[in-house]
Length: 507
Image (tube, rainbow, N blue to C red):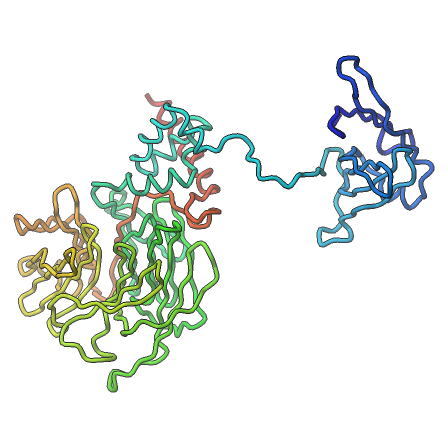
């Protein structure tokens, strides 16, 4: 049975035999009046036509008018399409997959072909409409958006409505904001950047610590994603769901440069932006340099060239704050500046700008640029007194010294040249410091450091790489560029279900 010409259609007759094949439609439902449209006698067909259209399945697809008469279109189990007049005349071959890149199809006794209409009519209500019209669904939406990723994935198994809601872009965008509000930093270590293997700090044991890598840097989280560089290649990742994408470049000279890739987020179009900067030439003696720059959206593969920044960028990982990516300027190239400078890139306007940095001297020590308290900050070390000053921008672009960190009494665990702040705990205001082989919270009130993890590393040329990761379901290769990876979602949900069932058996 099928539908034909707006009526219920009944076909009877073996499609792979020489019996008559009858097509009837129900014209009068009240009177149960059936009308025979046609009876096809395949014995009258040419041998080549019978061989071509022989199939385990055959059914009408539609009725249309052509050459002044009515024709019935049929499909076969081998994906071939033909038409006959209502008088059951010889078939007119309309389509065979053999003539296309599809190639021949195996015959099947199930429906494999169908017609569709060009239409903008939605099939039922969208999940967003269902949520907004259901007080219960909207209430659960407001509860789930505050939970960590693991809990959200487990709860996606409760019912199909929750699962559909959690996989919407609306939920994912809301979750990445609310699930990270006023939360202590989630500290994750990169165990293997090439295969996207990450481990939370809390899961480390005495016999299992982080991997130590010399050339590896990773950014602070940007709306659920991180970007990093390792040796001569780069990557974009979401450690919360194990997502990692490698980024390689034709213009790579094989050297490690920590400031070559920056990550931003365009909130107008809900897309992450990657900016890549490489040096074609640089001469420290003459201060001459030449750079090239390009950008792409993370969920797209096409790069577009950009005019290079007006200053050379330093080998320091950039950061993202309020719609702009910021780099430290390299002081040994280009125009001489008495104080530090910063290059910014507006991810909406796609333009670079030079900003005046805080009143720090490059001669005193290292500088890093980062985001703390949702503001642009620069940390400046002073090797003369073993201190780190953290400067923060005010509303009108003025710089204010926010923190003064003294490291003298914490040597050798926190060497000045290796120590940099990476986050602030919003609950108590303590500053998380990464010293390459020691990780600890500095309390600005007590001036003490609580070491939460340390490694005995005899070779200071290698270090571990702790990163701050967001509770995030963001996966940039969904159709909109911000949704969760559904294949990962499915596999993780199955694992979560196993955990739920296992725990349930032991209660």
